Length: 127
Image 1 (cartoon, helix red, strand yellow):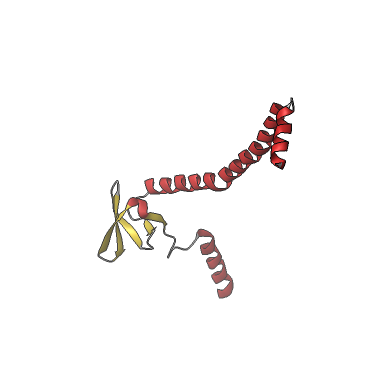
Image 2 (tube, rainbow, N blue to C red; image 1 turned 135 degrees about the horizontal axis):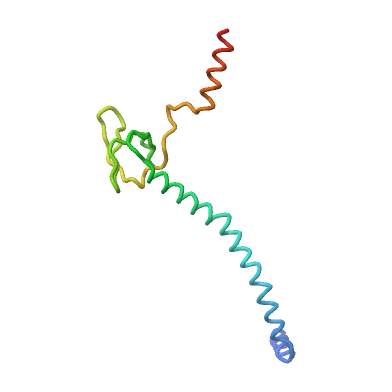
């Protein structure tokens, strides 16, 4: 009964259409802001990550060391459009889908900055 009284009072008010538009804006603006924040926090970084991964896949060449999504480490021996052949040990080759290559491998490689630091440490310690 209480809600019917309020509804009939609002229906009798002459400026009700203006109030409805204010109510719609009061709900619409936060929703638009929420979707905007969601886009910049989740969607945009994921699209960028996917684009960077695709560039890496297109730039692969023979003898690159890679890591697959399954964790296999290997050197690229043959490259195809959809499949690549990895050599995971001497004489052991595995065919893998190109899309399953997660990244280039950094295992066993010394970063450039760390190599310079090691040389400086050896010269100081040895002298």
